Structure formats: C-alpha cells, structure tokens
Length: 260
Image (tube, rainbow, N blue to C red; front, side, top):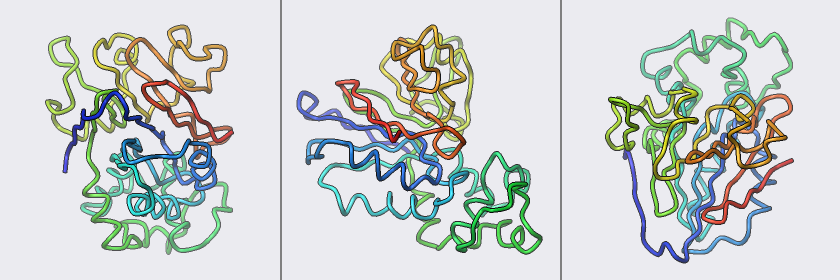
C-alpha cells in the first residue's frame, strides 16, 4: 500500500497528526491523553519514525499497531525514514546506519531485548551488533506491518508525508508522482519549506529548530516549537532527543497538543 486519499465528510471531519515519536512511549501517551475524544468521523495520522533514539521503541511500535482496534477513528500510520532504514537492514544489511549513535539503532535493539541503554558511547558490543545487523529481533508480524506502511496520505485538509515533496522542473510534485517513493521519507531541503506553494503539507523528519523561524506563523520566538510556514507545517519537535518533545496538530483548526 503506497497511498490513501479520503476527502469525504470534510466539513465535519477532523484530522489529528502526530509527529516523530522515536521510542518515547511516555510522550505518546501524554499527547494521546490530551487529544479530544476521537469519533468515527476523525482521522489520526502518524508521520512515521516510531522507533530509534528513545528508550521504548518496541512499546511505541506495538502501541501504534494496536490503535486501529482500540479507537473509533480512522488510524493512518505512515512510513518514516527510520522504518525504511530498518527494512533495508533486514533485506540487505546496512552497518552505516546501525553504528552512528545519532541514528539510535542501538536503543531500538535494546528495547526489544530488554536491556537498558546505559552505555553513553552508543557503541554496541560484538554480540549486540550481531543481533542488530539483519534486524533479527523484529517479529515476522512487525516486519510485515512496517512493509505495509504507506508513504503518504491525503484528505480534504492536507497532504501528510514524513519528510517532504520533490521538485521537478521547478515545481513540487504531488506524492503520487514522486519517484522513488522512498525519497518522500529522506528528502531534506530548505527550499521545500520556503518555496513550496500549494495544498497544505504536514511533515516530520526535519527538526523544527533548524527551520527559518522568521517564516513561521506559530510562536517564532520559540524555535523548538512547531513550525508553520505559508503552505508547510513541520511538527518534528525532537522526541527521542535531549530537550525534545512530541507534538500533535489538529486540522483544520490548527490546534496544537504537546507532551511537554
């Protein structure tokens, strides 16, 4: 499944978008508790990156997988570049992704096997790396779920994608036209945030504090907060990293919910 579009009942439906969770189950629970009661007309969209960096990646992934059975609303879980990276590890191996501490892969492995991430160097032991190098700790069901995660979603309120849209001949393409689809998960260009004009796009992936605050229409005095430009809203507020928190956005009201 690569995409899904639903523009029905637009006048009554709400869409709640949750940014990159990165293993922070406590933050996810806090944000979910702060949302209003979700109804059958509502949609809950996750922008991907459920795993890595934070201490409870397995708990986050399992929680998101259960939500369609627990909530009345539609739940859309998108693929992030970290899920994409682990699928590459599983299929072909990718030590260059696994080793850098900033990627948080060791935290994910330890959350699955039940050990604490106490080694601040972030270097796996030889035994740990052997367990990580092809992702053998993931269950077959978890891997299948990650493979089915769509690359984008669209409804009447906006387009939702992990990282952003790609430009061709000076114009930004709809995600259905972007190839390869994985580029929607990994792209990171300042020009997308400053130059894109079109239907509202909500993204994660790029930390909001790195974006041009002078263009944000939402608390520009707080660079760690959600970033809202002319046609792009970015909600990766650093969950899983020191000082970060989790953000959710309600559309069309543009109401913000935070874990902090």
